[in-house]
Amino acid sequence: MQELVDLLNGFIWSPALIYLCLGTGLFFSVMTRFVQVRHFAEMWRLLFSGRESEKGISSFQALTVSLSGRVGTGNIAGVAAAIGFGGPGAVFWMWLVAFLGAATAYTESTLAQIYKEEQEGQYRGGPAYYIEKAMGQKWYAWIFAIATILACGVLLPGVQSNSIGNAVEMAFGPGQLIETGMGTLTFTKIATATAIVLALGFIIFGGVKRIAHFTQIIVPFMALAYILVACVIIGLNISEIPGIMAMIMDDAFTPMAGFGAAIGWGVKRGVYSNEAGQGTGPHAAAAAEVDHPAQQGLVQAFSVYVDTLFVCSATAFMILITGAYNVHGAGEGVFLIQNLAANVAANSPAFTQTAVESVLPGVGKPFVALALFFFSFTTILAYYYIAETNVAYLKRTLHIPGLTFLLKVVLMSATFYGAVKTANLAWGMGDVGVGLMAWLNIIGILIIFFMARPALKALKDYERQQKEGVSKYTFDPEKLGIKNADFWVDRNAKNKH
Image 1 (cartoon, rainbow, N blue to C red):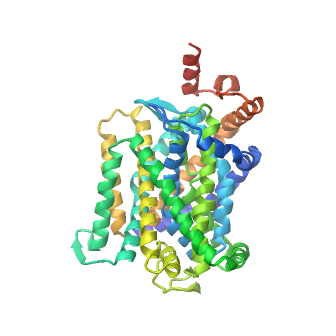
Image 2 (image 1 turned 180 degrees about the vertical axis):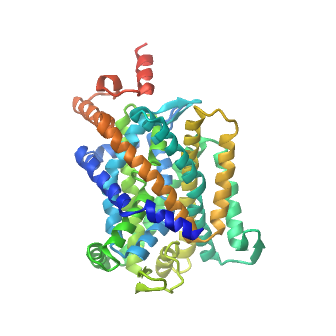
Image 3 (image 1 turned 30 degrees about the vertical axis):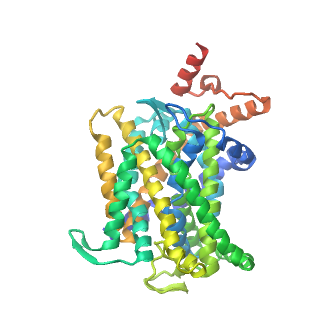
């Protein structure tokens, strides 16, 4: 199984996808005149100005739902993996992919708002919807929807629950060994997996509003607590920061871990963590209640900053300051840098737990386990919401009863399986899922841009209204020459009456 997954990843995560992610980010940055820099103040203003409605969630809730997808295992175990396989220089490439990716996130989330629909009393949207309406290619939209249900419903939840299982086991010990149909498992992992699945079932059977209300409390609280601990560790070692920055910059452009390895791992884990271009963020963006599509695009661009520039950087600095990492070489058991035991897995939260534990003995490992539990748990909720949205998309054509219930059962099973199995297999399967979605979505948004430029037209329209100082923003797709934005056309017609 591991060999098959590695083979698939070799094709999917070829240099072509790495450069496609970076190139698309650069392209949209230039085309939007670096929207992620020019509208930084507006992003802050919009973050807290939205409102919840009967059918939609507020901008802030949409941000926390998508942040719950972004801030997860990628920020703790993913950063460790980037350093462990790509060297400290991989951190620079994570920063770059976040900065450029903010423009990609603006584009895809604005498209999700423009082409959203109202289904069964709530807003739905995402790449499948905008590919069908803006590109006019239903077959391509179906491929994306099926790939996303497979990725978010089956492949990715296991990555998150796997890291929770590993972190809890490292913090509290494995406990007694138990023989099962899945092999010999530890009591700690079985108990953790059971607790995750029970909590997950309670929330996902409660619908999108329950997910939004849960994440809007948990995500900001946990992210702040995590960043505060990181600030304490960085503050206690502040004199080392210039040296760490120099090491990151030097290694980003030297062949220490292979120039390609640093770029490859930095971009791979950067895209995994901040999800810009991956096509997951737009699902939550479409559910927001806003006056103009560009508003949610700007809010989602900001979430990339929160994820990579704050949370990932916090993890990277903790690991590098405390020296709690190894850098793997080309062969098995070959290390370019070895500060920890050879059996410490780079694809797990172990680097981060060791780093915090070295500064805060007795607190570090349980704290990272707790942070990881909430980060990863909320990410699984976001995955469920994304998969459910794509099931709802397919149900517009396929009227098969019980599809959503089946999704819930499969996702809970995948979460349990991931929590008790090995890290490398879970991450490998997750990478297949992320890579497939990224390929399909990035090609889609580029084709849509060259066909009609809807996200750019929306941005220019928003900036025009900003200059005019309007008291309430409006969006008229017909006036801008944007076709098939039926939701907004209908809304405008209702407002006129």
